[in-house]
Image (cartoon, rainbow, N blue to C red; front, side, top):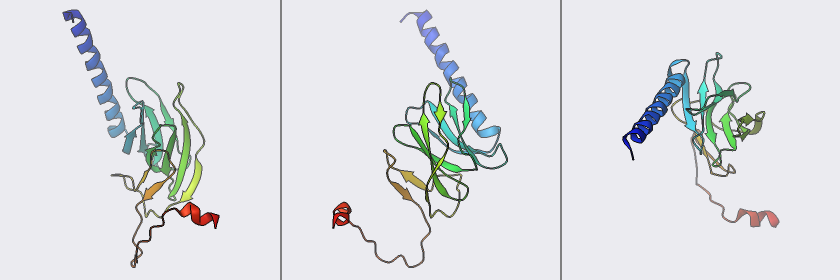
Length: 165
């Protein structure tokens, strides 16, 4: 590689690093923003922000791209991407699991949020999600409070066969 080419690569890397730092600063310092996660293709960042006065879910383009979109319609937190980046899950303020269809574009597009189910989560936590979703978005593991007497754990295998009977 020629010295001019090496210089061009280095300048490009510095510009990308500066853009990443600017995005981080925007996430952290301009409003309380928490629980952010990159989309599986690393093109977008989903995060919670209270810049409107209450926690909401936003998606922003990862640098050097630009763009920011409000995803939730009535508050929310704890966003998580489906494995292919075409769906975003989050908890509404009343702790309902919500889903939004995503078209990563360009241009980026998000559907109106839809209710999936009521969770047993006791509240929002900025430090981490209280749930995980599997890669295809069909199953959730949710942290919920112990009812005191948890009893025995029952695992049912081949449960679809039981439905046929």
